[in-house]
Image 1 (cartoon, one colour):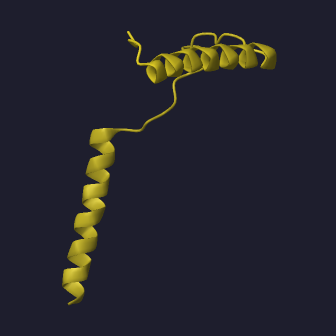
Image 2 (spheres, one colour):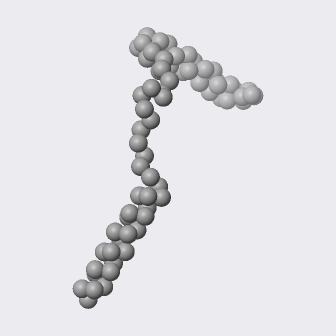
Image 3 (cartoon, rainbow, N blue to C red):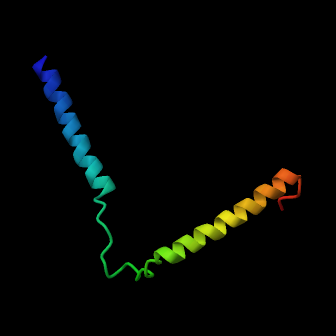
Amino acid sequence: MFIMFAGVGIIGALASILASLLVGSSSPPAEEETPDAAPAPTVEIEIATIKNELAAMRQLLEKIATGGDTK
């Protein structure tokens, strides 16, 4: 019985080592490789964008409600 558990443990350890060799490590890219990110939009810009999207959705829903073509 002990030999069976030892065998399963050895096979598991070997499988783990083999998997780590084949897959490799997933290290994050270096900072110098990443492009400069655009500055984050301000709250006012985000709110204006959301208002525009809601207005477009309202118009689309009104067209659907009146039976108009959505395309």
